[in-house]
Image (cartoon, rainbow, N blue to C red; front, side, top):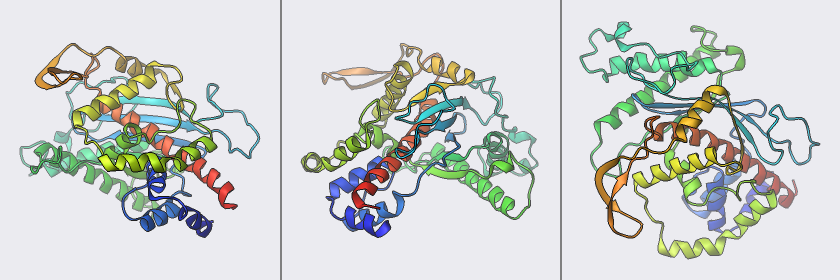
Length: 380
């Protein structure tokens, strides 16, 4: 199939190949030959096991850490007869996402969290760790962050026994500025420590060593680093699929094949660079639309009791508060930027971890549908 797939992909335009890559979370930069080899290698590889698929999505942070846990039900393959779905409301034409847990946590004790009833164990206090001796007065020193990272992995993430663990990839700079913010360095350090703890536990399990962490019979989760910019491009640059019903495979493929002329026209003008604040607002608005409107999302949605409380809180009207900063309004006039916060607090952390999870599902679903459509064209 690989050689036939490469041969077929070579008949497509570069813009069509880039569209395929955008729809399936495959890097879409480089020459046409780079795109063909990349698509041929990664398109056949699903991003989620099936079944069961249980995602734990983490929006990395120290004071505000977003956590979303969801189970995923996929429709049967087109060649298989219909089978009963474990989720009564699941559609047979699109994936169904059941959110089991959704919260915003803090790694520092004494700070109010959005979910006091969270089933996730709270990370231990830095001051209770033996590694603190000689760590220095800063709570963000490596000696303080290391036990926090270990506690986060062993007491919060792995006990949920996810099959897939998504970790938000941290940026190195803010807005392309030359200076690197101190807070960015701190969160990047925590991110690196979390990955180190995960890899250490994985190696220890393979060697039959180390302490028991989580449900070892469920296996170690597949861990992925997810770039927020790629998630945003997928939804904001038209990478989403054909609408609330998800579109048929033929419609999805026709959309890919018809992208050539339209995309070539757009390339002449270049891509508009969005400000981070605009991206944040649009992502929050998209999540709120899915949560507040039936059949607005290209996947089925349901919520456990605790997650439903967070959903209702996210849907609360934004607080009438302005930042005091002046920005360009729709009419071109200067106006104060409105806050996107609610009584629930900051929305970007909880919105990002939810959006990251559902995007991963959509990328996987697109890969499987596109591969099924390609197989019929390639002929096996």
